[in-house]
Length: 417
Image (tube, rainbow, N blue to C red; front, side, top):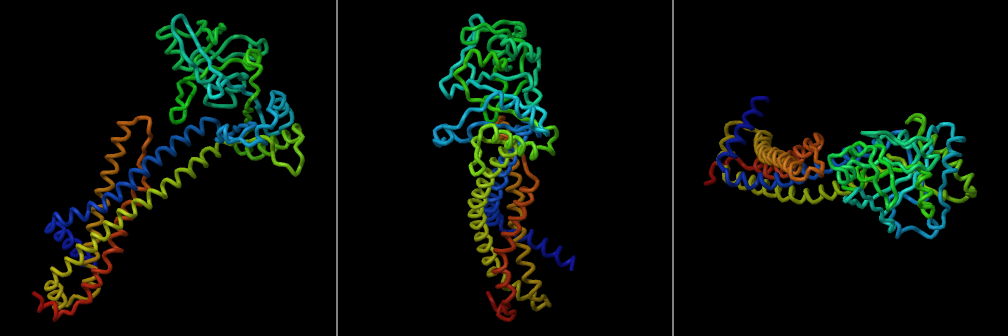
């Protein structure tokens, strides 16, 4: 049986070589379908790894509490959301005191250009428009692992308590304002007010080009509150003692805030809890739909390639009618003839699958070179799936021609000219 399979494969390879142009055109149809699956899946896989990495930077035991739902544009806020009471620093203190599984609860205030809150930073003749200015307590760096001071230091509890005009700036801001100068110890002007630079954040780019730590200035919470008392929108960062305690910590925080905000038992929460995993799950839902759409589009190309395979195999059956008759006269069974033609069909589509995988890998490499900010990573699963699809196309579309060849009458075949 093994020798018979080897002979079938050799015969299939000879058939491909004998009809190079026809075989090449057939192979290309399958290759294009596999290429689209491999390339899109590689980009999606790379993006998934990228987003997962960014989410993990928030902390595996940390979650956010806000007045408004995450990822819902301001213009889509309902009237109920707009009427919600703002969270306060007192809420954070209550969580620290009453939540048994929480170790940190810290408030954060943010100045957003989105709300018309522009911020200008100057040093001598250099000027930068800063996307975000954040007021935070020193505990923020313990709650969120991504806040790492690369040079200098974080401000202290005493500096926060005395509303000191100090700040930690992003690397991009430091480069733009100070160039080769050491920014630590320098004095810049934040909307005309003098602030001492006491630290620079570790390099950190935002998600998909959004503002990361490179473009952020963090100042003491009470300093921010004193300068811009009209900004009441704040987020609470809460850290559980251990990642395994995160669900319990979430339940406790919800219970504490519902009690403090006098939410009736039959009413929904008038605040939002966002876990880092929620961001990743939301992203996975989006990319899952994209992958499904890609598979549908790719299947069209694979079907077209499969029709080409069926066509070339039917032509091959007609051209080799006499050969089929000789094989049957020499003792070949129907199963032998069927296996031979199915092997040839699978060989054709397998060549297409390998070609599609190679083209997909090349496209991924070019994408990573041309667009460094667009992560793309080949997935072993989708490489295997692409090859399996190509083999499946050969099996499916090769069955009819193979069955037709096996059913031919040997006497009629030998008379065929």
